[in-house]
Amino acid sequence: MDIVIPGDGSPTEMKIKFTLKETVCPKTEDYKKAECVYKENGLMKKCSSTVTVVKTRPSEANSVEVTCEHVGPEERKELEKPKNPWWPFRR
Image (tube, rainbow, N blue to C red; front, side, top):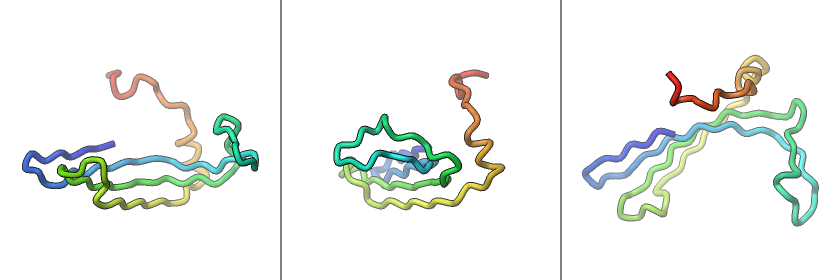
């Protein structure tokens, strides 16, 4: 996540990147998130969002923009690789 915090009281802009994966969840009213598993070969989307917050109202988003795109098979392999738990601290 990138955060830009201007010192002059103008809006703060946050850029967030995330991945959405299709799940298989039990169809019950009180389903447990832990019971949901990723669907084999389910849809995957790569998303990014820009959130703007005004300093005078930090608990409210002034604007939110989310964009998602379908992930193809080759990019999917890269995204599903285990991440290095020491990044970005390891050099």
